Image (cartoon, rainbow, N blue to C red; front, side):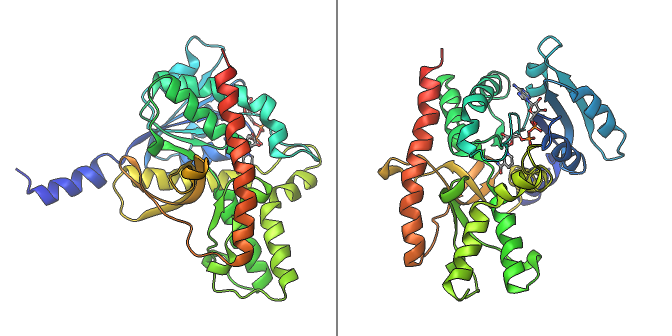
Length: 336
Ligand code: NAI
């Protein structure tokens, strides 16, 4: 018999480091490069791709890459395509839905994406209720509450395994602050908290080592982090929003989830989750650092000390978040 510490180590970190990952919306601007990056992730044993178009083609393309995972494409044209794609999945990544065009806010996407996310969440509830669900589809501030409500309706809601992916805000903050300060972006880490749209994105510059002066420099940086997505939407001139940087961000996030599941220690990442931090004020979801483990979230960290300006940003953020979350809840409550 194995000594218990050794058996624990074997079973927690080496034996089950093979995970089934499903990407819903896998043929899209984010879906394709995200699927490529997941094909390169050695913790993935089976990669299932689902979309309304082209998923089998994308899967066949990726299947020629010699990493140790199987790739399977599923279409909505085949019987139970979505159910098969999700069957017993460990992690589900959801970048399905429409992206922004110039002049649109993320909230403008609600009317289309809310229904898409609701229906996909219903399929998750039926086919892989134990999966870690990573929501990329915007508006994240509302789509994550939608998924939570759908799972609740089906009696399978596990708040420890539902994540809104806000990693793009984190990587933008690293990049943009390094451009201002002339530093190495790989060494920069900004704690970005709140939500994932405009003023709900709060980069806590006061927690970095940088003393950005004069104030205009800092304000400009904060604004760029909050509205960085608009730069891409404008530059793509009607052809979509961030896809490549987002797929990079999504793959980093998914890798953290997989590391947590496989029992790695001290896996901490920021995410928009069902959070106790401001629940008493009626805000059920909030992004802050969370520690991940084999059962999903093991600890939700507070956001830390804020400057007076950041406190003011938090007040505005909470007002908007409350509305965004309520909008998601209402949508599910009013759905048949
Ligand atoms: P896209 O239009 O290029 O791709 C979306 C894909 O979803 C398409 O292939 C479409 O066929 C598929 N799709 C639509 N309805 C579906 C359904 N019911 N089931 C399965 N697949 C379905 O859009 P893109 O650029 O990939 O963006 C996807 C979403 O990600 C958008 O909502 C966008 O706003 C969001 N996004 C989120 C970010 C974040 O930081 N969380 C950053 C950038 C974009």
